[in-house]
Length: 362
Image 1 (tube, helix red, strand yellow):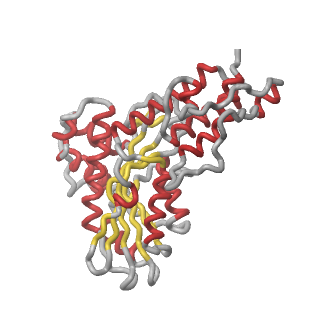
Image 2: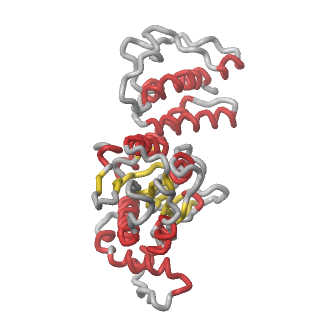
């Protein structure tokens, strides 16, 4: 039997509960549902001829829809949105949804977030990262920015709503200069950064986003991603995972002087090889894959550091640099991002750490 009353409860609660999860510096009261005010019947139930829902909120209502419907707590807005979309998709496809399916959507969303929090502390949805970064840029009156990104070219890193897409549209004014190659390492080097920074407008500023990526499959395995149109999950980041597998297998290190046809991959193999003690100390599975992403981030950040310069623009021009790990999420989740560093460099040589101001403690 299709449990449309529970579905209606979910849909009716979605709009009001999402508001409660939205980050805010002050408590919003004008949209809070008063105690004993009945919830509205959903459009879906009205079509089915169901009676309006009769239950009401109490003076101490459940903190989440998950707590109301399944007993599972939920305190992550992205998990809420993902479960909402998953439930709506099921209703659209099947014409209804069972209570068990609703509970399974909530459970899945909570499990995804639990894995992310365990392995990538401080990671947030891409849209939340954007809003926090923009607030800091506003403080510095940095509104004439040329954006550059050092991100892996894998197509799953450049989809609508990903941090790359959001930054291009909302920070770079629709423009971006690409520095990155495999695994997000800035393989264009000093020449690439020099070309990019030469394009910064007089009085303008530079913003660098550098990040490797890691996928999570529909089976909740890190280091894999369930790509559309394929019946199996594949590696993500494939280059980083491939480099680690090369080293685990004990294959010889490539000679970078002669490996011109696949230089980027061979460079990664060399660098991952130096970090195998840290990787070998991790348990197989998600723990090792998360550590691989952290090590790959450091590889990219080390190269980026050799390329950066404030020799652009005018005396007031600033260089903003943010690095982290891009997380390609499963199901209906927006991609997450774990910020690992955020700073601004000025022409006088000073460097201001912006991480705490933007992202706080977690």
